[in-house]
Length: 397
Image (cartoon, rainbow, N blue to C red; front, side, top):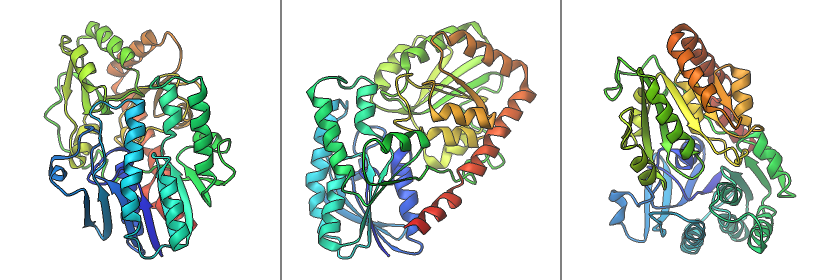
């Protein structure tokens, strides 16, 4: 088949949507002719990567048998709702030129965000034929309203969700990454819907092949947050947690990542001796990082209900280490932790004391900690194996 993937994020971005769009493209390229329309890489730093800054506005390259067509899109250093909208529109306008570089098409896969990219896919389908599949990695508008980037009431949200529905109804089929998001999706479109989760290559996140990581202190209980430092996480609670952990002398917390909130959060933790910031590591180093922590944490805002299924959780659980996560009571993440016995999920208002007790329990019960971590890895291998999920998806195509 001739397959075109339209995704704002792509390799060499090695986290989030870019990681999954590239993984999907390269897997399909083993048996099909795959082309990708994308932007210059910028995530999670929110700055075009140094090696791409000098590239022309339109730039093409071949990466692992995939032909990639790029457009140099406006990239706000500090994204706001309106700046994101402008970025989305700029990508759409610029990528129209790349649509005409596609000569044959059987299937076009549009990855959301951006919602407006669905029109690019529909236009390609109209002029070249084939089917249009939309894959929702993130309900970008729901996330913006739930995290406070924009007001949830008024004329603007109503208009935006009508536009979103119009675009989604142009698709032959729409998929998304969690059952909670699938339920939400069914209220947004009349198109057929399906479940297509993110995955993990558990051979690359594997404690048996991990080498010691020098950033951790072997005399401490090392707690790690690694990922996007953005609006969806509850950084006020993170700061409260860091402050409270000063009372547990054995604990040291590591914050590793990039994102729109980085400067603000790093400024707030600089006076805490029990918390250290490092920039993101390369994907090749992620295994050594994740598998050498003693505990993973992810503090999500309780207002966000499965508008996104955090991909970082797959890596956290594959590392065979326990995790403590907060979020909404109805989150699918909560369900996954409950059935796997691979970590702890909290959604109560007064959860700090409970979490601190859990940290002390894990410090004092190392064998239980090992068992919880092994449960997490076993669950991920069974439910989110890369080959299993992508093989099924290829058959669907």
